[in-house]
Image (tube, rainbow, N blue to C red; front, side):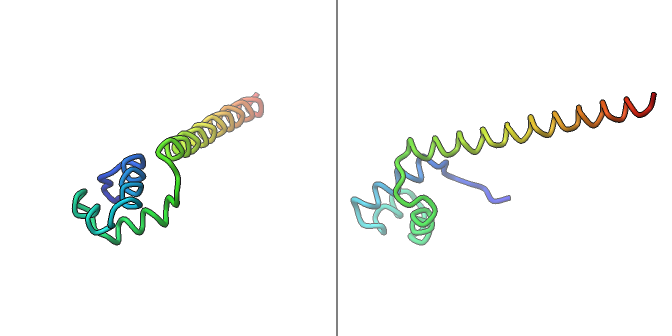
Length: 86
């Protein structure tokens, strides 16, 4: 798995800084490559840091919903197996 040096909010903050200043200067300041900044820009577009945080919360919420659904399914399966035994 890739190691991530920056969370989403700092990435967006760096992108906002790159909108105001030359990309080469911002990349050097934050010790990332220029192509990395362009990849982030393609990935995030123009969201604000609060938008990125909201997206992460939504993804986490979806994951939790999946876990609850999986748990419910396993409980139902266990109950069905127990009903058939007797």
